[in-house]
Length: 487
Image (tube, rainbow, N blue to C red; front, side, top):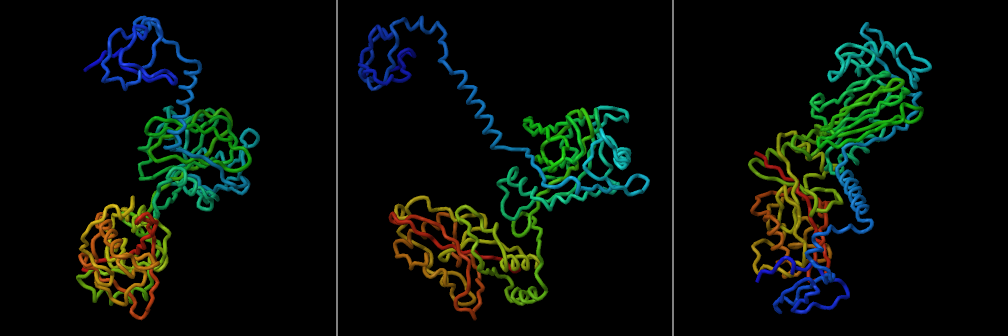
């Protein structure tokens, strides 16, 4: 039965009696209700007519509007916190230690010492520098004048004594603007240009298209030249703005500001003095196994390559694998195996790459191997609650794949946790969960595992994944295989 909207309750006032099946006329509900809906809670209405009540606007509670404003402020703060696009800081450097070397159009090399206050003394080298500058493409003025925003021509040599790599600026930029950058990805900088704003000048918006060089971010370092005004305004792709006023080149630490590559920036009018800044392009690089096109930082020696060469020649048309030696203190349920490598493991990886092979890192446990793009993620609840009665997999790693060398001790049973082999029921439960997570037996993967037959207990890296079995917390030992197909 469909009831009138007037009969639908909002909620029951605490302390009010349970509503009966029939409403009274004083409730503003002048009709009988069926006992079948007596479980609904009804809010008691005042004695005045409900119709008259609806016709009169209700006054908001005291402090209600203040609460809405308060919530809006919190929402804006958290939204900005979740998606920062600009950050600023200081470089602990004495300005007197900074020197700028440049070559003018006439071919003469000049040096500019800091700090500078043009209201008291303008160094001749500064006049030469400004005379060699050119206006920005986005300048609002058509003719050359003192009010244009200028930049030093990139074809003329310019070298500051400031080395940005000697200061932890990139670490601050990475932690603030790229907090989710995976392992193996790094930030590098390339000096871009020197920008100059004299008194009365301003810089119009510099769109992203002017910096279409693949940069991930931009860093602006303000040089110690006194000025007033000239605030830096940064606008992201959504139109949100950040304004950085700075210290006006006062004595003390140097100031820097970084913003993402999809932002545009501008500088407000310099009211007094001269604003000078050097921009740096920040680029994302991948080294080691991470990334689509890895760019290695190391190269194996010729001796190491000579040791690997006969192994590859004798492994034609086969998949070979090496156990990773180090422990990486990562969670296999959260991290892909191809994001870790160090020491000799990293050396072997790059040696295989030099032979034009495609090495991959896979998680492995109990005679199973996970695909390269899968994590060991299957221990959400008690594994004994959903047991599969049958298991199609081997009981030990030495019985599943082809192993060159002695058995590897870290995996003694189907799934061992170094405290002893699991019983048959637990092993069956583990197998079912492993299969559900996408892992396949090493026998089906047709992988030959290479180990040193002269070493009884080879060192093998291991990670641990916690899981619950019969109400008890246990840990599954997981190893990493470096796999490569030799054509």
